[in-house]
Image 1: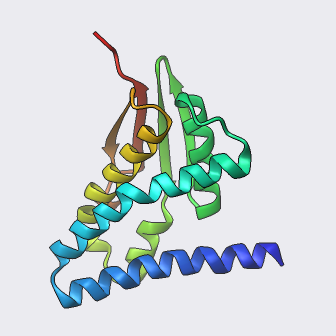
Image 2: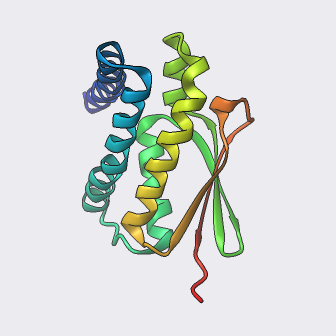
Length: 160
């Protein structure tokens, strides 16, 4: 029963995100919907990360805790990904993204690169900030732009 409930709420979560976007796009424009979506995804990671920390007993400080929380998020949402530690930074390789798959299924795959460029940068920057303002983030490649994987790099910023 719990697995069914999880699947139900996961599907509802994905559906409501797309539904409100399309409704706003129809009422105004794609650019306006994307602007509002970016604002939403600057806040959503705060809500998600705080709940994951509470539910899983994660302290919430530093790169290790950030990666643990993201691994939980990615697992619940159905991403296929891996981590690569390289010195003072970690590279997350996303090989399958449920958001991109949904956009392709909805016939909106051609717009996915524009959406991913803004939303993924806003979302993962916000995730990093929730765990330590000294963690840098860069989006190095994207599935939705034709790359073989999304590459999310997190590392501590050098302080002068």
